[in-house]
Length: 470
Image (cartoon, rainbow, N blue to C red; front, side, top):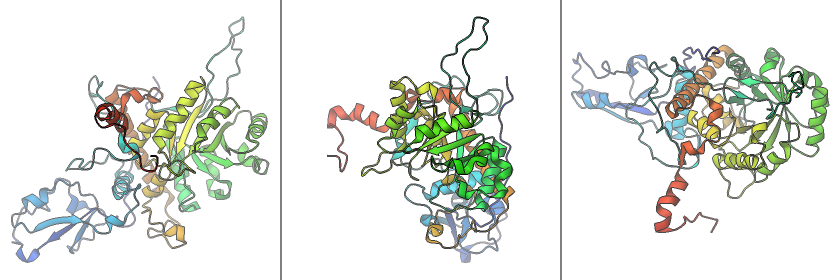
């Protein structure tokens, strides 16, 4: 059995005081002042003692970053003077998709490399838009692992970027007659990408490249973003080119293991030219995730490409549509199109856009993806607040537009990926699946709200009317 893939984490404290979810309020004029067992001292999580970069000169209010919401401090204050409310700055974080709680969890995971927990449990709605309308079915678990997710049980999270041969041919002497394409297997179904919608510079790309090298994954980069400092990480970079600028980047392609070409007119000829000039390189084609994506996938699957990379928008929505569908429906459509054509096993599918949580990785694979990319989540790991100031040419409040410690950034990203990998392994273990490739397309191991609603309430109330679709 090969050695287990394990990510080693190291605490990477934030550089700036994170925006905590909760604010504590005390009416100190009523404080007894003589409590030997003040509720702050009895906090089981040591929030008041170890709150990161806590502005604790005992000022009021106190902004708590790592509070676990157990409410013990509120309930056990003998004078009843201790209360808590939502931090008003917390409400301004993110947007309607990258919500404040997403940013908060990503900061926590990047800081400690641990799975986030809540002392109050999950208190939100049980259904919502996008991936929140999909649940994983873990009812077939045989038994829990005896010694944790990193114990004796072996769960493989590898996937391939290289094309697969579905049938091998042999000569009379039993030597291999088939021409086997180059193989590139990555240990995680997660690649890195920096969205051009946000800040892109050497200061944030270098930590991402360092993390990709340590983790054994790949980072998508545009040629104009490459700098000499990224040269040592060429094996872990995927240059994103177009059929028109291939010849101008010959040296870049020769230094890379993988290259991506943007879909467009003449892409088939460009693929043939790259394959002939660089026979050992892995070739991806980048495709916009619109209504034609499934048809383009079927058309390109037999063109010699190894992997198809589909781009949704930053919220995981379909491109160029008045009523855009979400990523999970789009992945399913592309996957099933290739299944119907009998060519799904030959090619790999990677999807970008809207991957905001660890559960999104597993759910995308269940829908039919081989792998996904992390984009905004990587910047958030570096303390980005998604305030949008960089889009307006303004300075970054956490100074991502200035030089930063690349090793610190690398550790933050590694911590985030480690927490995501732990959650993926935990979910797969609970489902009784020991191979990430076995999870691909396993929609029978999931439940979709729209299907359950139609099955149970459709006979009573009829079909749900979708606004704008009649």
